[in-house]
Length: 416
Image 1 (cartoon, rainbow, N blue to C red):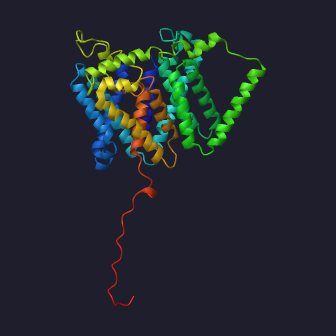
Image 2: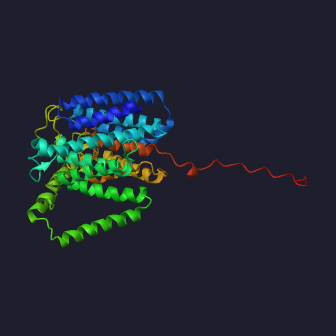
Image 3: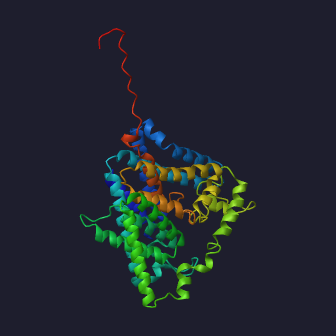
């Protein structure tokens, strides 16, 4: 189980980062293997307990199937549902069979090391393959995208790497602090260079929430960070160092803050489309296709446009267009429920990296369609972490103990 899980996770990251061959063939092959393994495990280990634990997920998948069945993009949407089903079944198999934690730890380590290598190579590419790691035709002009091809994808990867490095017991053999420091530095540098403000906010929110729950000496850590920041600010003031206005605009892209780089217009148009199909939407993963067509000119084939389906830069709005009110209600419930379960049932505080990922992706999902169809690894990692959270049992000390019958009273007059 451990070797299979690690291999499949690493291949999914490679699919996002390596521009070799057809990524849909790679995705289909890898997720087909996940689906086969997950279904076989579930059939062999068929029990009512695990089925009940993931009830919101099963209901969500049923709604997505209904949405796909009523969509004119049926073939495309049905394949996206099948893709998500493969991730869900494989994640359940991992979560239910990994009570002693080695598989979970192996997946976390494999994800961290794979992302560290990809992010480090991306940074090295600034000097040896500049044109490959920068993208010109994006909002904000020329922006750093690394090996992923899009700044947002690098921002997602760097955020997950940051969480694993800070809270995932990230190490190489017995070497821990140097490895963690290197991973944190690489992740932060990649986050900064992408100019992806959505992921800056998501990483900050996740770091604060996770450190508050998972770091015992959190107040000392906060104080140390504040002292270092104050010293840095004092040094910059004494040295009369300042960032030019042009550099600030380039880094923060201040000219696009007002309309969030055009996102507000996209969301307004999307909400108009939601009114046309309020309950089940256009079909899972097909909302972007519905947005690019009008009532008089639908795509003649579900396959058209499937190679590059536009997203709506907000996972929650995307869900409304894709699967309507019913799907979005379950979608949001799963996200909130997974975070809640991790907070209250991870009493040993073993899943800090997974909690960081849940929080980071849930917050970032407000500015990018991160938690979406299982097409990229960050989305897959979210569903894996959510399934892991739903699998957690109540600690033994808090479970309701079975009532013990009181001893029958002795008969009157009997010697006691």
